[in-house]
Length: 168
Image 1 (cartoon, helix red, strand yellow):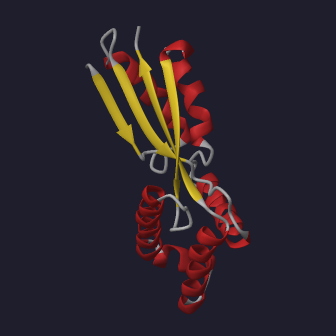
Image 2 (cartoon, one colour):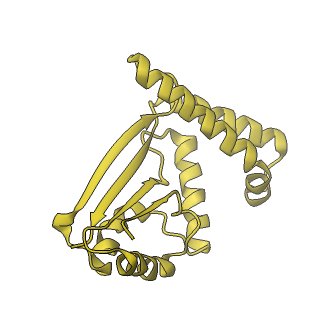
Image 3 (cartoon, one colour):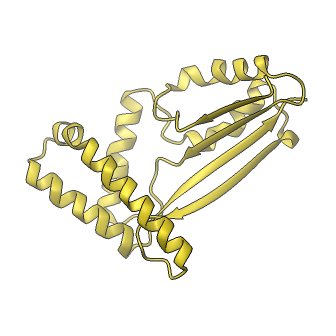
Protein backbone atom coordinates (compact mmCIF):
# COMPACT_ATOMS: atom_id res chain seq x y z
CA UNK A 1 0.00 0.00 0.00
CA UNK A 2 1.06 3.56 -0.65
CA UNK A 3 -1.14 5.08 2.04
CA UNK A 4 -3.40 4.05 4.91
CA UNK A 5 -5.81 6.69 6.19
CA UNK A 6 -7.78 6.49 9.41
CA UNK A 7 -9.85 9.04 11.31
CA UNK A 8 -12.09 9.13 14.37
CA UNK A 9 -11.60 5.50 15.36
CA UNK A 10 -10.26 6.09 18.88
CA UNK A 11 -13.77 5.93 20.33
CA UNK A 12 -14.45 2.57 18.67
CA UNK A 13 -11.34 0.49 19.23
CA UNK A 14 -10.28 -0.93 22.58
CA UNK A 15 -6.80 -0.32 24.01
CA UNK A 16 -5.64 -3.89 23.45
CA UNK A 17 -6.44 -3.75 19.71
CA UNK A 18 -4.28 -0.73 18.88
CA UNK A 19 -0.82 -2.38 18.87
CA UNK A 20 -1.84 -5.10 16.37
CA UNK A 21 -3.70 -2.55 14.21
CA UNK A 22 -0.62 -0.33 13.94
CA UNK A 23 1.59 -3.34 13.29
CA UNK A 24 -0.74 -4.39 10.46
CA UNK A 25 -0.60 -0.88 9.01
CA UNK A 26 3.19 -1.10 9.10
CA UNK A 27 3.13 -4.55 7.49
CA UNK A 28 0.94 -3.59 4.51
CA UNK A 29 2.83 -0.39 3.68
CA UNK A 30 5.53 -0.50 1.07
CA UNK A 31 8.78 1.34 1.82
CA UNK A 32 8.08 5.05 1.51
CA UNK A 33 4.38 4.43 2.21
CA UNK A 34 2.56 6.58 4.72
CA UNK A 35 -0.18 6.31 7.28
CA UNK A 36 -2.26 9.33 8.16
CA UNK A 37 -4.26 9.37 11.36
CA UNK A 38 -6.70 12.07 12.44
CA UNK A 39 -8.15 11.99 15.96
CA UNK A 40 -9.52 14.59 18.33
CA UNK A 41 -8.91 14.67 22.05
CA UNK A 42 -11.73 13.21 24.11
CA UNK A 43 -11.15 15.83 26.79
CA UNK A 44 -12.63 19.28 26.34
CA UNK A 45 -10.23 22.19 26.31
CA UNK A 46 -11.01 25.25 28.48
CA UNK A 47 -13.95 23.51 30.17
CA UNK A 48 -16.28 25.03 32.71
CA UNK A 49 -17.59 23.03 35.68
CA UNK A 50 -20.33 21.21 33.74
CA UNK A 51 -17.93 20.22 30.94
CA UNK A 52 -15.42 18.98 33.55
CA UNK A 53 -18.12 16.76 35.04
CA UNK A 54 -19.08 15.57 31.56
CA UNK A 55 -15.44 14.69 30.81
CA UNK A 56 -15.21 12.73 34.07
CA UNK A 57 -18.29 10.76 33.10
CA UNK A 58 -16.88 10.10 29.62
CA UNK A 59 -13.55 9.02 31.08
CA UNK A 60 -15.35 6.54 33.36
CA UNK A 61 -17.34 5.22 30.40
CA UNK A 62 -14.13 4.80 28.40
CA UNK A 63 -12.45 2.90 31.22
CA UNK A 64 -15.45 0.59 31.58
CA UNK A 65 -15.36 -0.12 27.85
CA UNK A 66 -11.56 -0.47 27.60
CA UNK A 67 -11.29 2.66 25.42
CA UNK A 68 -8.21 4.85 25.85
CA UNK A 69 -9.54 8.26 26.97
CA UNK A 70 -6.03 9.70 26.47
CA UNK A 71 -5.49 7.96 23.12
CA UNK A 72 -3.96 10.98 21.40
CA UNK A 73 -1.17 10.99 24.01
CA UNK A 74 -0.46 7.31 23.20
CA UNK A 75 -0.22 7.46 19.41
CA UNK A 76 3.47 8.29 19.10
CA UNK A 77 4.44 5.35 21.34
CA UNK A 78 2.08 3.03 19.45
CA UNK A 79 3.54 4.09 16.08
CA UNK A 80 7.09 3.54 17.33
CA UNK A 81 6.06 0.15 18.73
CA UNK A 82 4.78 -0.82 15.28
CA UNK A 83 8.10 -0.01 13.61
CA UNK A 84 7.92 3.66 12.64
CA UNK A 85 10.91 5.76 13.68
CA UNK A 86 10.28 9.02 15.54
CA UNK A 87 12.09 11.10 12.92
CA UNK A 88 9.64 9.82 10.28
CA UNK A 89 6.52 10.83 12.22
CA UNK A 90 4.99 14.27 11.81
CA UNK A 91 2.43 15.41 14.37
CA UNK A 92 0.25 18.44 13.70
CA UNK A 93 -2.24 19.93 16.17
CA UNK A 94 -5.16 22.09 15.09
CA UNK A 95 -7.45 23.73 17.64
CA UNK A 96 -10.98 24.41 16.35
CA UNK A 97 -13.16 26.70 18.48
CA UNK A 98 -16.56 25.54 19.68
CA UNK A 99 -18.96 28.44 19.28
CA UNK A 100 -18.79 31.90 17.85
CA UNK A 101 -16.52 33.41 20.50
CA UNK A 102 -13.47 34.05 18.25
CA UNK A 103 -13.07 37.55 16.79
CA UNK A 104 -11.55 36.35 13.51
CA UNK A 105 -14.35 35.70 10.96
CA UNK A 106 -12.94 32.39 9.67
CA UNK A 107 -12.48 30.99 13.17
CA UNK A 108 -15.95 32.26 14.13
CA UNK A 109 -17.42 30.30 11.18
CA UNK A 110 -15.44 27.16 12.08
CA UNK A 111 -16.60 27.59 15.67
CA UNK A 112 -20.22 27.82 14.55
CA UNK A 113 -19.88 24.60 12.53
CA UNK A 114 -18.07 22.79 15.35
CA UNK A 115 -20.79 23.82 17.81
CA UNK A 116 -23.45 22.47 15.43
CA UNK A 117 -21.54 19.16 15.40
CA UNK A 118 -21.62 19.13 19.21
CA UNK A 119 -25.37 19.88 19.21
CA UNK A 120 -25.95 16.94 16.85
CA UNK A 121 -23.80 14.72 19.07
CA UNK A 122 -25.81 15.57 22.19
CA UNK A 123 -29.08 15.10 20.31
CA UNK A 124 -28.01 11.71 18.90
CA UNK A 125 -26.62 10.44 22.23
CA UNK A 126 -29.50 11.80 24.32
CA UNK A 127 -31.01 8.46 25.33
CA UNK A 128 -27.60 6.99 26.17
CA UNK A 129 -26.74 9.86 28.53
CA UNK A 130 -30.19 10.00 30.13
CA UNK A 131 -30.01 6.28 30.87
CA UNK A 132 -26.40 6.25 32.09
CA UNK A 133 -26.66 9.44 34.11
CA UNK A 134 -30.06 8.45 35.49
CA UNK A 135 -31.44 11.87 34.52
CA UNK A 136 -34.85 13.16 33.69
CA UNK A 137 -35.26 14.26 30.10
CA UNK A 138 -35.73 17.92 31.03
CA UNK A 139 -32.63 17.83 33.28
CA UNK A 140 -30.61 16.51 30.36
CA UNK A 141 -31.85 19.33 28.15
CA UNK A 142 -30.83 21.89 30.80
CA UNK A 143 -27.40 20.27 31.20
CA UNK A 144 -26.81 20.31 27.44
CA UNK A 145 -27.78 23.98 27.29
CA UNK A 146 -25.27 24.67 30.07
CA UNK A 147 -22.58 22.75 28.15
CA UNK A 148 -23.28 24.82 25.06
CA UNK A 149 -23.12 28.03 27.10
CA UNK A 150 -19.79 26.97 28.63
CA UNK A 151 -18.23 26.52 25.19
CA UNK A 152 -18.87 30.22 24.58
CA UNK A 153 -18.15 31.49 28.09
CA UNK A 154 -14.88 29.58 28.59
CA UNK A 155 -13.74 29.70 24.94
CA UNK A 156 -13.83 25.94 24.48
CA UNK A 157 -12.19 24.25 21.54
CA UNK A 158 -11.66 20.84 20.03
CA UNK A 159 -8.06 19.76 19.58
CA UNK A 160 -7.50 17.73 16.43
CA UNK A 161 -4.32 15.73 16.00
CA UNK A 162 -2.92 14.54 12.71
CA UNK A 163 -0.01 12.12 12.45
CA UNK A 164 1.72 11.23 9.20
CA UNK A 165 4.18 8.38 9.57
CA UNK A 166 6.40 7.16 6.77
CA UNK A 167 7.74 3.64 6.51
CA UNK A 168 11.44 3.54 5.70
